[in-house]
Length: 336
Ligand code: UDP
Ligand code: MG
Image 1 (cartoon, helix red, strand yellow):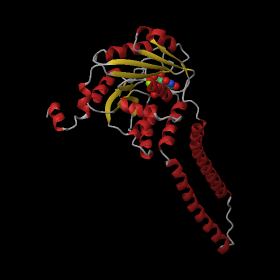
Image 2: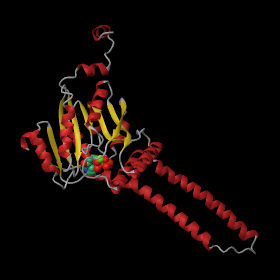
Image 3: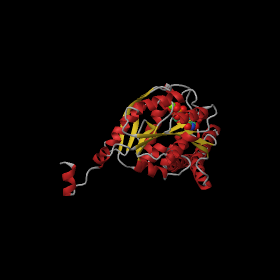
Image 4: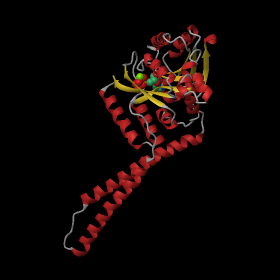
């Protein structure tokens, strides 16, 4: 049935058709977090612009977020903005972290579709063109899922395990092996801007929004220059934010552990009282037993306090209501 006929008989034209008809002149925004990427950022921009040139039917904007780099990335970003009218640079007053940098870029991005990608070429620009195709085809969120990745075996193993653990305990369906490389339709981006929590785990928020989500498999490349900006400490924090932000399973586990240790305690009590009452001639040398029980219970209590503490820490962060990020300057082409 042609669209004209659809119109006449009142059948709504499906979303995907409407979108691909109005192709020309649509704006695609790229949100690009940068932290100490001086070595590779120029090359990255050249690659990205070279790739999007294959799809001249769209307009583009590139929103770089300089996340408090200490290595001259800002100077290079200024240069890039000077030479490319489509570039804007948000300059943070300090390092706020990857998730917050993405948030700031998203806040400024005005595109009909917004693509978030890393600036170390681990997320290949050509995959973003495939995302655009999926978007034209009707998807509202396009997730890039890693089929393979070239990281250290340790990182691959921990990431693999973590995503599966998270999936088993999270209240929303967080896709496995998916980072922050994704496309968001204008509507989805608008909704995501409304999530203002301070401990952020963006892939969880996107999963919790719903919309028509689609997955694209890709092979994650190696970093072109420099080294990872996610040391163990930051990775652990992100992992914890993912769990505490989207699951209360750890809190429930505490209750279960409590019941289990109560059951053990009851057995222990019955055992020792029976011995004391009916077999007074047996004196048990109880030092080992005492130590084991004490340390076990002490450890369990500390662990429980730690879990409760992480949730309270989240609450504390939220009630302070501090700004999510502080921008020193937004640099546009004409000011660079
Ligand atoms: N990044 C950032 N702020 C940070 C850490 C990282 O903006 O505090 C950026 C970084 O420049 C890169 C992206 O986030 O564009 C992903 O970081 P990285 O490549 O180091 O992480 P990995 O790929 O090793 O997980
Ligand atoms: Mg990387």
